[in-house]
Image (cartoon, rainbow, N blue to C red; front, side, top):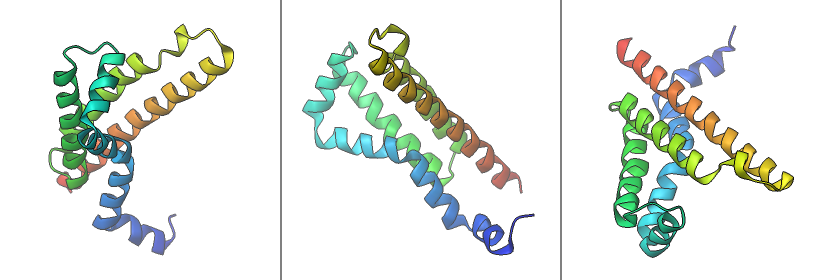
Length: 137
């Protein structure tokens, strides 16, 4: 049984919004950073072989900020979570292919990053599930 003060906190809408803002923090802050440094964002896209880089950066910023906002605001949370989940899966495969890294220490770090991103995908799915339950109740 959940203690009453914790149960009361878990029912608060602001607490869910704060938790979702924290879950999406890596995305919307990255999107804002890309907006602030478009040259760096374009260089990053080119480094990873994403062509045309401008299209990749535009799509990335829209997904990172737009999908985060959907999830945080609880509006079409399934779409926001899905967009961020697909984005994360693709970005993780592109940027962290640990299976291709020869150096054991570097492979260890890439594998951990890969798994952390997989955990984020799980958190996004859970956020969509909880948002759907909120709508139905």
